[in-house]
Picture 1 (cartoon, rainbow, N blue to C red):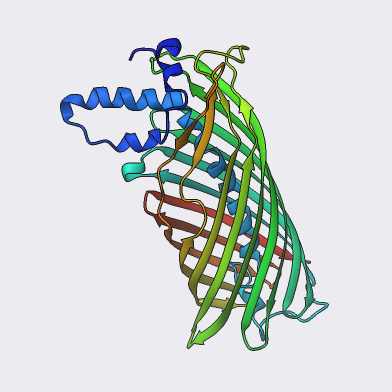
Picture 2 (cartoon, helix red, strand yellow):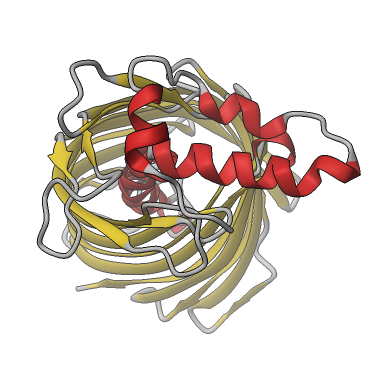
Length: 372
């Protein structure tokens, strides 16, 4: 493929390049397929579209941390023994420590085939039982996520550190409520092509950002014979902002086709309705095994499309790049099993998936809890 000429082409795009990603789904004849691919890659390179997913990638780390905290609460997957009548009295196991490790992969598909995101996350926490049915705690988490644009034209790595607090309560009537607040700090490094040749030079960038978040859930536990059903209604909020930065290549801040990248913000506000089925299969000598299945419907009230405003060095005008619009309706499912040993140590193993128009996510993880 030919290299893109910055003076002859890139400057002419300044101020006029809007919604380039929309062009990626153009219908073309097989004869023109190579030309369309060349045009697509050219648009990606000149627009900085490889940077579009940075805020989404950062926010996914904060979301994973929230899920780890919520799993620890009474309506989560690792505390079925806290049910009234089966829990511990105050003074017996007042403190608990827990840890979780998860991995996940998100892939945009169909007309939005653009980004592939992989991430690993870890979290640890401690909490205290105020009374027989109330827990309060705090947590620390880390995450490493990588976003790569289709065609290997660019990628971004995000390292995140999170702090959070949470609480949950289960009433004698089997109603429960939980909630928490989180803060995540992000360090972002980008690396992308500056033309479409097979041996393209690369430009790099560094920036920082943060995510503030909150979650809450209410619901009720119901017994259907030997099977328990938890019905839930909840919300999850995340607000991410990444700072502006300047790209550089080979020590040259103004390298050809390098960009002055604007700040990026993204807000996710989801309403969630779900049910979880669980059942004690084994309960022998203080130990038990509990498989569970959770299915939920989520609606995204927040941002469904990424956007980024960039400018070429020396240009007087900036331009806006828009990502593909993802669906607002999201279906999630989680399948796992909890194994408890002697009312002190509990291990949870599970997998999860979510699907929305234009994107699918799969993941899995392991967690452990120990009562002191």
